[in-house]
Length: 159
Image (cartoon, rainbow, N blue to C red; front, side):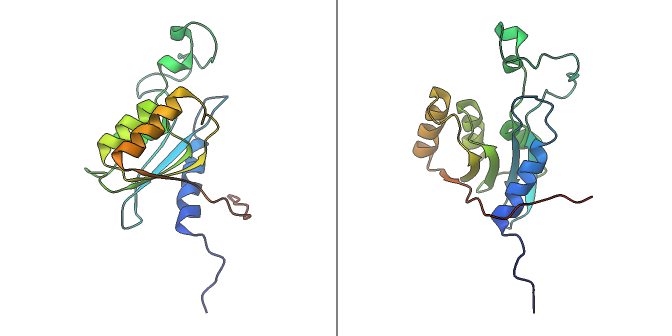
């Protein structure tokens, strides 16, 4: 008889997104993303961080100050990193698992890439204009969004 307490696909892929977020060097917000094709195969992962070639130690990570003195001018979001670093040519009809609801800039890339469903863990910026814009674009583009159904299961990584 097979075991019954194995991870669901949602738990598995959101777990990969959460693990990816742990790679972020941002001391305030760590976001991870996992893109999966229709065969439940992972085609990309990403986390929020500096672009390739930009040394993390030389770049600003601050949230406050002039635009050029903060992380906002430089950090590449998890969703965009996953889209740009994919291992398949097309993301058409893929699902995106992400730990934080996408912003409007990532929404544009998600829509253009052909992703058709977004499963997100948290939407703490639901009232912000950039999140509202993302929601509107997803609605008009016919992209399904749903909040991840958190289980009571605690996932622990044992090394």
